[in-house]
Length: 227
Image (cartoon, rainbow, N blue to C red; front, side, top):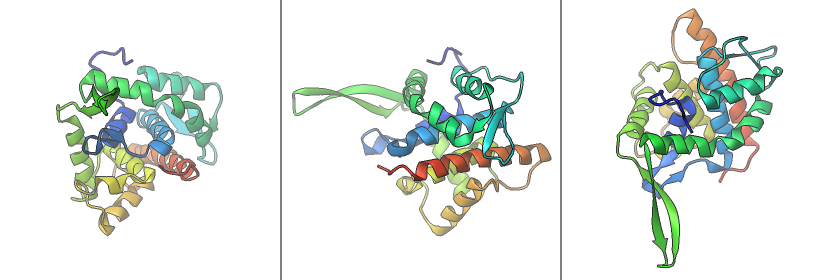
C-alpha cells in the first residue's frame, strides 16, 4: 500500500495502468512477462531519480550511496541493490515477481482502476477490473502517442514508458490508439536504445542508464514465452 498520501505515482504504476486493457475485459497486457517489465520500470524510476547507476560493463547496477528513494516500493528495490552491486537481470528476477499486487492496489486506491464483481453462469462471482473514469490512463496513452506518432520530444518518464511498452511486446494491442505502423515501430526501437533526442549532458547520462536497464528487462523477457 502506498502510505504517502497524495504522492505522485511511480513509473511502474503508470506502466501497469497503461498495460491495463479496459476494453478487453479488464485484462493486463503482457501478463506472461509482466514481472520483468514492472521490475524494469522500478529500476528505470530509480535511475531517473539518480538513486542507482550502472556499474562496470553497464550490465550491473549499484546504488548511489546515501540517496535512497522515499517511496516504499522503490526503497525495497534500492535496499536489495544496496547489499552489493548486481546484474540488472538478477535484480529484475528478485524484485519483479512481487510487484503486480501492490502496484495494482495503489491504482485502485487512486481511483485509476475500479475493482468490482460479476456473476458467471449465474453461479460464480468473479472479481473484475474496470477503468476508474478519472482520465489518467487516457492521458498516459496520449503522452505516449504524441511521442511515437506525432514525433514530440519525450520527457524522460514518457520515453521510458514507451520503451518499456515496446520491449514488452504489447504495443500492437494499442493499435486503435497508437497505430502499429513502421514509423511508430522504428521510433519505439529508438527509445529502447536511449535515443530520446537532444538534451542536456545530465539527461544524456540518465537516459543511457535507463536504456541499459530497459534493454536488460527486454532481454530477460524474451526468454519467457509470452501469453
